[in-house]
Length: 310
Image (cartoon, rainbow, N blue to C red; front, side, top):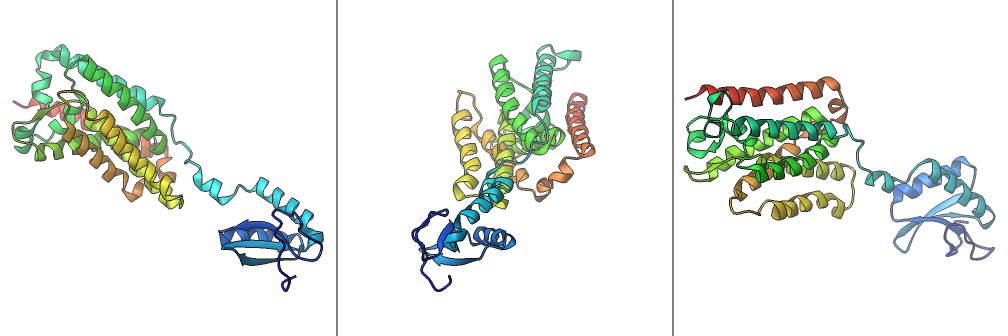
């Protein structure tokens, strides 16, 4: 068989009785080599050649039907590598609990501020005042994330925040997603205060919303690179993140575009951290609870500091 030209049949279609038949063709050498091992295990003589830029697996005409059937059974029991590479990772959480926690936190903080609970001016104490933040009032980077100017402002951030947080929860788990969202928002606010003038003031959870989007995009990009997916699939999450920034983050007269950009950049940076690839560790309940407790402690601590300050 090695000395004869192969017939141009594909998947066992015989081109004639006197030459080898092509039962599999692929540009991936490892795939063809794996199928060759299957035929060897079945005692079917075969040969692998490079033909027209692709690797082909050849058998004698009288073995073609049996070889095709064995390869069909193998593919049914073992999904092709390309198909496995395209699969998304198994979700670590449903995302429902994270979305509900996000919505409840935003609504509760809005009601407290709107009613001036305990006699405090929550907005004055907690908004992202660039001059105050540069002077050392670091907590404003966190507290500003829970304040909103009015109901439409609140509703938009609750809706889109819940969507992005839910998606992030599926990828990292609920507790870790909460911490990443909070940190990306706080870092985005801090960077925004440095870039804007000293008189700049802002509030709202949108910085954290775009932080969650950036984190999710970076995580998906890293995952797809590790799975050696196509360039199109690798870059799609990042392109979509930029598209959503342009579509959602530039609307409105009082929109703080710089804060949205810094939130997205902070999220991309956090999502690129190598430890987030350790899905076995992220799946541990104690890791998720620890991250959730740290998140809650940061919010409560920041507001405690803000209300205690003068």
